[in-house]
Image (cartoon, rainbow, N blue to C red):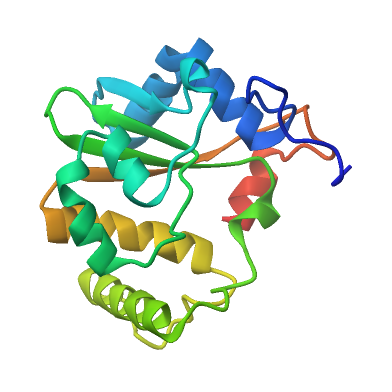
Amino acid sequence: NPHMPRCDDTGRAFAGSQKQIQFYVNEQPSALNRAISDAFKTPFSLCWVSPLSSDGYREYWDSAFLNVLGLSQHCKELDRFWPSGGPHWDALACVEKTGGDVLLVEAKSHVPEIFGNGRGAEAASSIEKIEQAIVATKEWLHISQQADWTGPLYQSANRIAHLYFFTEILRIEAWLVNVYFIDDHSILNPTSRTMWESGI
């Protein structure tokens, strides 16, 4: 029901990927860490900073997400790179083994959540920042500038652009993790592995 609240008074979500990522970060972090380590074939020692139950399961974006990662000294660089109202991160972690490195998480329970309505109606100055960031990110990845990253794939594109921001502008090693929940029975029509593989 779209009119029902998504979370209780503590900030805990009732269903979907928000509920699942809250559960794994707070109650099963070792399982989440293991899945991420296996995916990258790299042993990670992660210190999760969001969404923590002790912090009302808060999600972060803009300068606040740098602050919670201990990188507040880079807020001006982020402001030059991307306008306010940037990606809202489903989960964030510091990579302890290297110090200062970060892990950015997007979580989904439905295939359609990958897609969106495209870039919003930002001011001209914001559009220019976004377009410059996307052009630079495509160059970094050797992707054709003709690829439409401001339409349905914009949600993924702006996350990838922030990966570029960390690795190429700040020179901080970063990982972008897409967590796709299989058979999430807190939602209608849970997504099977086959459905995810096809959608991806």
